[in-house]
Amino acid sequence: MNVAASRPPIVTGALLVRMATVVASSIGFFLPFAVVPEYAERSSGATAAGAANAALLVTTVAVELAAPALVARIGYRWALGLGLLALGAPTLVLMASSDAAVVIAVSALRGVGFAITVVAGGALTAELVPASRRGEGLALVGLVSGVSALVGLPAGSWLAQVAGYDAVFAVTAAVPILSVLTVPFLPGRPAAAGRAAGVMAGLRTPSLMWPAAIFAASAAGTGILCTFVPLAVRGGPLWLAPAALLAQSATATLAKWVAGRAGDRRGHEGLLLPGLLLSAAGMAAVSLTSWSVSVMVGAAVFGAGFGVLQNATMTVMYARVRPEMFSTVSALWNAAYDSGMAAGAFAVGLLAPFTGYPPALLITAVLMAAALPLVRNARRIPAAA
Image 1 (cartoon, one colour):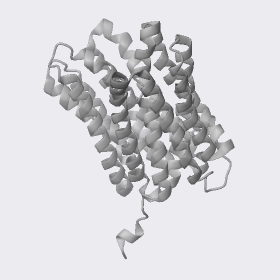
Image 2 (cartoon, helix red, strand yellow):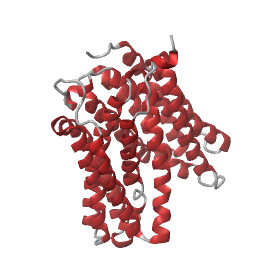
Image 3 (cartoon, helix red, strand yellow):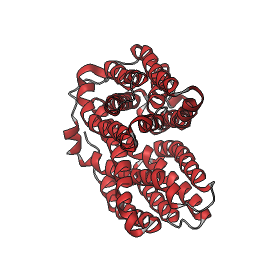
Image 4 (spheres, one colour):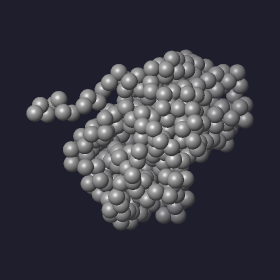
């Protein structure tokens, strides 16, 4: 028997079209991410700057939980198209006004659009990838998204410096809007017939919530590293903070790919424990902020654990539901990601003034390790019908 012939291809025409919307949504989200707060701060002060991205993230999480109902009602194409339009078009308003209320309202609308895009798009991706190679396929799409985000974030700041804010806002609007032209070439609704379940049903399903909780624990660490590593290593080498963040991002991207391939062959549930252990060990090493080598190695180890859990938890959750519930899984997973990052950064922000950064980071590592019993629960619970 030809082994290669027995493995269905991952990359199809439909998946390539889907990748175009992945790139568009990542650029639409990350290109202005650091620019909008600066734009708001120049005219309305630091409070408006913080409120802009807060509105973006809060509405993203809130709408992610409501988006499955929309996807079930109008289908993948309409939901994805609507999300892309809402992500890009409101940015054009910023070319006419920098008023704080306008900036916050635009950010909130963009959060709505991004939430719909990631929920509908995530569910569609899971359907387009063969079940037997879903881990590898999700890793491939995640790589496309990650590289787009990695390029988009600094590119926005650069473009604002060389061409002005309006150029950033114009590109941010144009890319998602133009990508809507590709949406008609995507599937409209789940291939399998059946009644879709909402987010509340997902929240009552332990076989979905345990993996989501494990991922949220690691995502909290990502929010902490991105927010506080530059502050925690202040006074050390100037290269340390950017190098550590780059190491975390690079190893996470590589680990997603490795985990996808390994999980498809040996089972994704078995990756939950090493992923969480690597996350906790990496954070513990980062807490030794006076040792540059420890911070670098810790960031890389944490990134590896986070990347493993990104892929493994998502793949496990999709494997436990029917196709008509893919949007519910996408919503729960993305909400775990975003809320975990926000909660981690918020908690350490409250704790660090009393303990200092090294103890706060070490406490985070201990709390991650305390989540290890969740792995046993996540692996023991049988897949949902």
